[in-house]
Image (tube, rainbow over all chains, first blue to last red; front, top):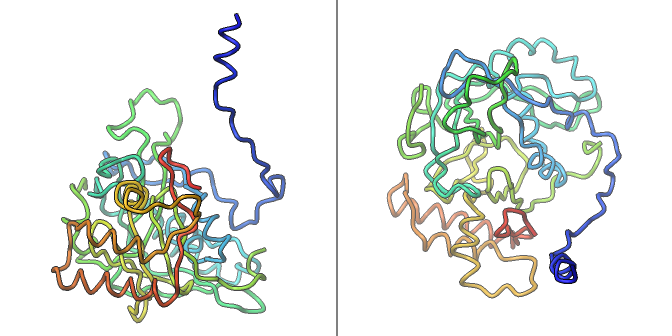
Length: 207
Length: 130
């Protein structure tokens, strides 16, 4: 018994830290939907859900970097960013919906570089969309963001780390199975409808 | 909320989910131009001037190439110039020709030097950051 107690006491104790403001209400901009709908990389006509890596946009916002989360709302989720008086731009709702992740026209696999614990980036998938408008921060008394047309020579790449890189078994009972995590998104110069130098960036085009 | 607060203060930010370290001078819309598997330049979306840069696979770079070469001790920060120099020496699967790649790294280094950028969040082996 003594030996067991000794063994247990030698275990490293988890370090507990106080999270300040943990009970505070999240600002609307950070009240992201739990998942975003998108095509499956394995079957373009099948719709699946992807969770969103919220930590990085929150981290950027802590440093007052606003553009990443505005791009998430307008180009990945395809919605107006939830900001005071945004209703003045409600005419854009249809345009935003038509440029969301759900409307991806190309998918690639493997980013050909280490990402976190994945030494080759093999389990990362990239969806390409062709957005025409996004929102940017502009100090204004009425609404602090405004829509801005995107240049025509760029596409949006949205990166997803799949939970089951070889595809989830079809036995899932969820109506729309959640299959991965959107880690980040960025505008990239294009060549046709895909990013420039796609062959160097990604190992394989899926569709 | 954050909108009424002061503006963006340039800082190198480590993004854990994408495992990348990004530094931009201004919080402006940007386009990302790949240089090689490690470095991407961040350009102004409209006039394509340099806003900053992104080091991809930063945890791997840091643990494999930076940490073994530098004794950080208890320091909680690292000069981004040091990191860039280490990355440049690693080489990579470049999209650009060698001269262009070198120029891209030089541009990134100039920004890091001019702005005296420090890396305050260093990844750990277990995947979390300091």
